[in-house]
Length: 438
Image 1 (cartoon, helix red, strand yellow):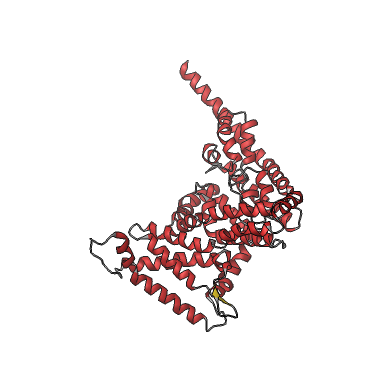
Image 2 (spheres, rainbow, N blue to C red; image 1 turned 45 degrees about the horizontal axis):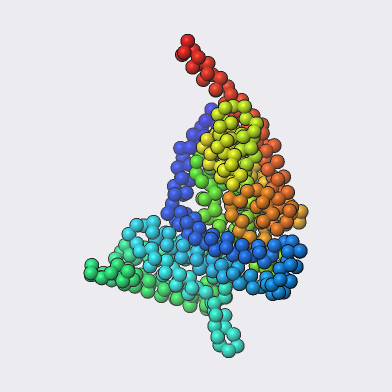
């Protein structure tokens, strides 16, 4: 009785709230805005992998063929991509958020947000008086600023546009010109406000807006998100939301992406400089070692459905889910078995990835397995391959295999229960059909 009440409470009260959060325009804007960054990260990671591939014979061969500075030259492309992800993120977030309102010129909003973002960055000045923008602030160091400015500046822009704080141009004026003049008043107010904010902070001990964000927001969130406890909490919500049909990875990733992508790029910079990698928890930590087969680490379950299931229904699902599962796509299992709203499979679906978080974290922390070194391996890369590419070591592949075996051991008894139940239902259906035929 109490289980029914608690399930009813989750289904009727809690999950509608979670569903609204997942569909909120700001969270969707974060998710879709950060998607604009991913091609740059993958391209930069490719050049990083080529310049830092962890096989001494390969590195020696490349140095002989292309010269001792070949890795530095390859690094130009990595810098060109990694060093602008903050700037690209603010454009993407602002554009997606403004577009979601339907009646706002998203391009104008994103350009105002970009200008506000650039205004927050303190310039470096050398002895000759020449000034330049520090690339770090345009890259991973600027991700939190990109997030905040992309959301708050765009909302301010939209609010002013809805209040008609704009120049109205005649209908005969080309739309591009009309949009530009419409954005003048909101844009001026936003840039003036950001300038006054920067001026005011320059008189405090913080000195710059990035310092304020780092001290008050970025450091505490990174400390939590980069810890074992933060990783466990994040992964719990990924699985928990999926149990009710909400894409947990998108919801949690939309919130945690600035932390995990930032820590990934820090590892990439350390790898380029041949320094010790500072972070265990990164985007690749989850993509490649916790989500093998998809959220819930369902690859071992997919293999069991393919080769061990006795139920005709589960065998069919296994044939559908097996190949996508190798590429970390598990919707056929989530909705076909199903795992969504399935109290039997809910337990291993939550427990297995939490166990993988623990084994992966401590294996990397204590040096048994190499940390991910900043290469953004596409999340669809099959396990074993992705473990080697993400860490540059065969130990990464071994850890993936260990996690899959442990996950299989946890899933197995629940799989057997589901298989027996499916067999029983199939037998009852056949008996009922035979009775009708007679």
